[in-house]
Image (cartoon, rainbow, N blue to C red; front, side, top):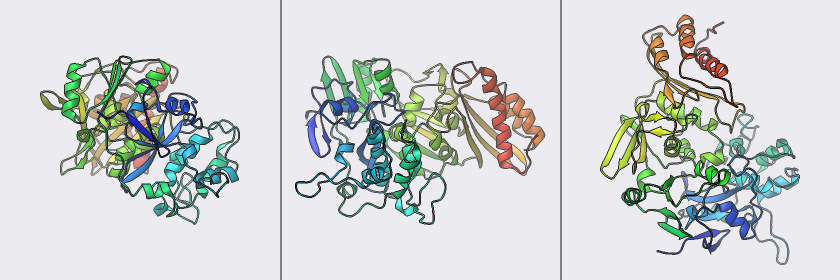
Length: 487
């Protein structure tokens, strides 16, 4: 097997002697690329942002920004990375490098003060700068809303980057001022070539291994041999365990590039989403086909996290406060579990068995998530958190309702943050179905919803607050879908 290596700013370098748990951030800094900073080590500040060449949605390659503090460098074996130092191009002979357009705008508009966060902002901004369909959404008259610039720049691209001294106004001004990449731009030209193919990796050092099998069959065989292995996709959860809790694993198995887990198909009776398709890819490929998912994505962590995180990973951790399970419960989704003996399909409502526990057997993987069609026409996702974006839910509520001739024919409600597992609000669904979609029905059902689950007190919210927010969410949905507003 070829020795593990990575291309950084156009130069290929071996990953050895880095330990298998070494992050891309530490790997880069140890090699003098200190523009990449560590701020939080858990994917919340964006100071570590770098660009990675990934298979594109609209072009052969997309430049995608990721948190270098979370990704093991071995996970980028055979891949291409660009850091803030690699964005500048050669200037005049004998002179300094020419600033990248994003760097230029940040400089002239005062977007940097202490400079600690600036390289991360620049990399996240560059990923949006190179988004193929950005300029197609440009509106020279002034932008479509406060979060989209006249140049088509989506500020959600910067939702995972924090600045503690400059203030966001000059950074926003810089983002809204960048133009369109020129034909001479080498990173723009790179988008027209295929992204690096996935590389089968078996990197072992000091008794620990990072393995990326080439096929699903190989993966299942390996998991049978190594039941202690930690399975990762985007590493957005495991990376935090490594950094903050100093967790180490004897064997890490990566499934993020397995072809069998990377498919997304829209059929006549269901949509099947591969467990390793990133949330950003799902969002852009479905393009609003599933409105409830379209509501979820902007509220799920940050763009930096969504560029790596997957539905399979979010379900695999079994967290009761994950944002996707309530939505998928409302959509009546099922998970496709693959094991050595074949596949089985389990309704998500039957998947969770306890706190971070599920029916998934040792050696099984989530291969895909299936969403049945047709979709309920009335849908909403309400996330109650301390911050509008990039925060963990105190409560998450997803609704999917069929309302015909003023009567609720079908109701599905998924809840997160109110029990040891994500749950369906079965009593509230029963209180709605067969009844008129009217204030009296909704108020009565809201009282039932307040009693669903077993909410607890913690640093995010009290149990009383969580219960109150459950009922309020249903009243809000009613207000949003009718002209009548309940008192």
